Image (cartoon, rainbow, N blue to C red; front, side, top):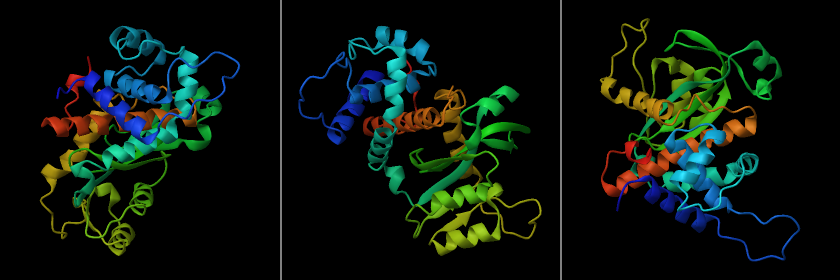
Length: 294
């Protein structure tokens, strides 16, 4: 089996068809018939994320050249935008089905982290954007700057499998956002590895009550706390976030509405898990995406 974009899209299409079979034939309705099915649109979204083209205006002409043998009829840009937003529930179901088959989904080590998701750079955007009720101002220690937008909360397996994620306003405390994600998981017997931003007695006590153990680096004001040797493992979650940002252009989502933002982020999560699944089957490194970018 080859690990290339065509093979990946065929695998995603087969998985989508098994979960969302085509409805029975109906009486023809007025208007133009659809040129492309919902399952094909899901594959196009995955291809768009893996090719690193966040703009639909730029992607569709390239898709006609690169993927014309798989998708002979492509929709117009406005149709593509509207229908993709409606497919967010199917994206979630498909992502969870693919992730559930991966070894990282069943690993006893969970990696928890948050990353900034800027949604605007100007005062006009902050005041008029449809995202305004859902966003806030937050601080990014890694970049030493404030930003307006949301935070992406990630719960991952060691191989990069995204087990769960959430979008919260940028001013939401990390511990609060992390707990909301962990409480949705069966945590009995698990190890939750996170950074020092999650330090707090209430957080660790709540996770302990859920049946898991928190591992994190010590803060500067905890000189007496034993330092667990987790530095080399802690870098794993940073590399997963880097894959989302650098190769899947997480921060260049170009979303202007809540539905658009959620759909674009979910499509990136699905694309990453689908690539990890095919790499796992072919014996390649889990997050090696270079072969799917051309």
